[in-house]
Length: 182
Image (cartoon, rainbow, N blue to C red; front, side, top):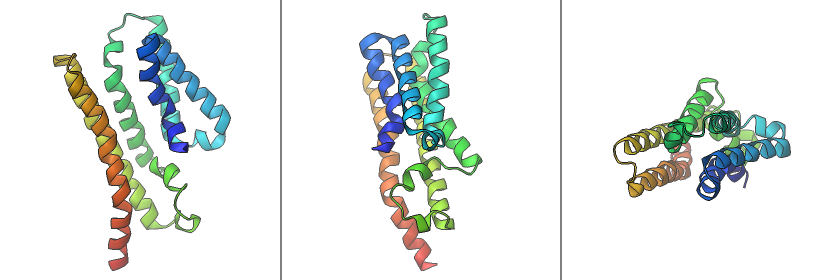
């Protein structure tokens, strides 16, 4: 459930935008960020996905209300996965892969500081970063050349989450098996 809370603003934005417009969508997503941080406190502050959402939706809200007619609005569907890709990449660079937040909820505590646990999370965070970056690129190009190609846009967004989710399910066991053989 905590993964859902981490991604809640990213999910709330398109839903609220579809119902109330992009300005309200940005404000609602920002509200989810603030409530999530207030509710979960310090643990949420360490969650890279939530902090990226806070910065992104604060900036998007400011732009949305300062210049409602900005062309930026058209590219928000590409900016969201681009922001997530950047956040995931930064989390690797600062040696705090964002998947660790989720992995610690399922892995026994005695594994958290092992090289294998760290390796698995660096690889998985890299997979997520790559997937988000590819998704952002596909969406940006599609929005530029064929903005009404809803099937392509939706397919890219779904694949951008489903592919790394599937890899996240099988890779840890494969890495543990390979480690056991070494």
